[in-house]
Image (cartoon, each protein chain N blue to C red):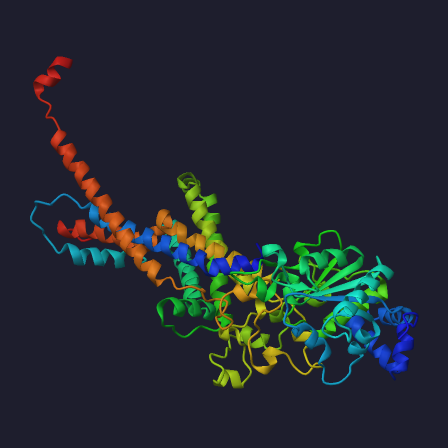
Length: 364
Length: 219
């Protein structure tokens, strides 16, 4: 595909009708919380957009994010949009390997300096000079810094790139950090999730292609249109929470009736993502709809936030040992105080000198 | 520190610290009270001091004839607050989950709609007693910072908890953190402020009744 082709040309070649394209643009406008009138503007901008060069760097990751994007059961418009970008470097997806692959990256960096999009998945290890993860002998840290220099914007895809994710979990043996810990002088868009919802990634790309800017972000660099609400507030099981109807186990009557999964450890209330509205697998369902509590995978440090199956209201630790020790210490301290007081009184009694009338007589 | 990190700390080490200080403080206050001892009473007892003490614990909780308007207000508002607070604390399903994890057993919860009412009643009674405290010139003079601190530390967990179960424009995680912080601070200060009355009220009343009972006086 030539880089001079517009998105409209590419989509047309792939058999996407104008109607299908407009439907996609309307859906995108709605997802990005834009007014409905923006759909034609998106269509107009997208159809004229040139294929942007994208460099995709995979660091300490499990390839789940790439899998999530590419393994949809049928080709969707979103995946075609993704296909319409010029993915110049992605060492899992590209055909080239070794020196040729690295050469493609370097060429893209040079040719589109200041214009290419950098997508990162995976965290960056810092311990031992980043020796835990290298590509072609270059540490992840070095490669990120080099490629970021010429990037127009950086998209940190997945919880590992956005917040450190699993590699960052206690005790973090590799000293893993997210992209935002390293890159301070470029706009970074975090698209967390383990993995993130594919349409959220395409939504961010579509926004960039349409407006040439990055979407509105929250304080954690997440697009507000996708991460503005928590799962709990948008969950279709929320009415059961409000009524106090909870599934107590995975196979009880409450679970069969589709009641709230809060008591089974659902982290929906503390998790910001679009799962409850956009859903997965082409809108089929999302974890809670399948009967499993939300793990909170798009939040920082979700691996270290206690068991996935412990309700949010439950302490993550046992306090009985420490409470037992506190009882013993409290009793000892109280009795010790009593003994001290007893001793003080006894001493005062012993030191007490009787005052005689004669003693008083001298003063009068 | 992220909100999730703060929440993890509050549900872990923060919880252990506050429980440890609460338990230590309460046991210390009780054992200190008991260990202080009293001088041996050489007079022959004229009645049973133990049962008279128990009787006083009960009788002082009752309305009785000849109470002043102020007395009625204190008693009614006091009861209303305590009932609202304790029902909310012990019968909200999320709280029962916590108690079950601590004690190993739970009990049936009340529907959230009822807990909403008990929490609102508790807060309304707290506001009423605060207004009374400020308006009444004698009570105002008798009040020191600790009275207002105790009021705030009791009101805040209720208010933050109420906000938590109703959709708000504030982050749920942040509200949950605040709610737990308020609850844990309350636990920590209870033994060392007037809030230790949750235990000492029984000791003090029993002691008053026991003295009277020993002398054969009906308390």
